[in-house]
Length: 365
Ligand code: PEP
Ligand code: MG
Image (cartoon, rainbow, N blue to C red; front, side, top):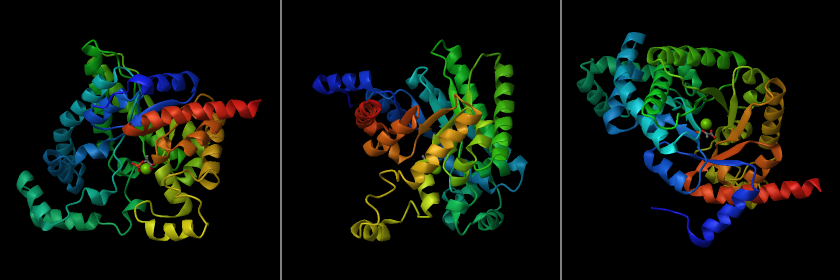
């Protein structure tokens, strides 16, 4: 098991004495969360809940839910997923012991959940007793030419609110359970992905509050929670003031924000990016090191416009850039509150955050 000790631990303690930025980790499994804490993460900045849905014992229920042709069918499948999802969060909250945990509601490009073969369809049919031909037809209806720009993120929550209701319920029930067991009370941060418009945020906020209040009343518990949004689309940056009306925090999803700002695929841009780097058009891969000009300007603008509406809006970053030293320097200069990166990069981020803080102080001299 990884553990920081000796001179390395001393160095980290020095860095912690200097840095202003908090450092969190992206984690969805108990193992990642434990590693994150051993490396000094001060919370989870991104729990990607779709990763919890691929377990072999869950995928059939998830496919059943996605392929259901009405709300009743989806609710039936969601009822099977709810206890598993609640347990996921109980485990994370236990490990994180009251540190902030940002849980992002479902954000899969839908095609990842669709059956990939007729065999997959047969498996769902067998597990559910539903008609295989009908399931196949539904899968074909849901197929998209460009899933990354399609039915993903909060768009799923808008089309099928019962999915997000189930997840909010699982989060708040888990928080109640952990608090009732006498453990440090979690303060979950419920985060909505791929939001572009103020009206979307308002819809999602109402859905979240309605469901959370319902659970809190049922359990007669006193659970605090926050509602916020990923900021990962140029429109979200430009209209950040609209989002801030209903979001208590922003987390910059710089993977998608880089993709949508440049219009370059985050998944298969390698071939031409290499030529761009060779020819000096790009200094570095913008998916590794933040493009501080275009993407960075959008982040600055979003921070400014968000703060104008909600002065204490909490700001973080959870794209891959959150673990990249040059990008962390940029985050410091914008005055973000935290960076979140993969668990194994947490020590690097702690050091980089300290260096960035020193750099900013020198600028002020
Ligand atoms: C992002 O887009 O930067 C992000 C953190 O979300 P994901 O990588 O899951 O799309
Ligand atoms: Mg994203």
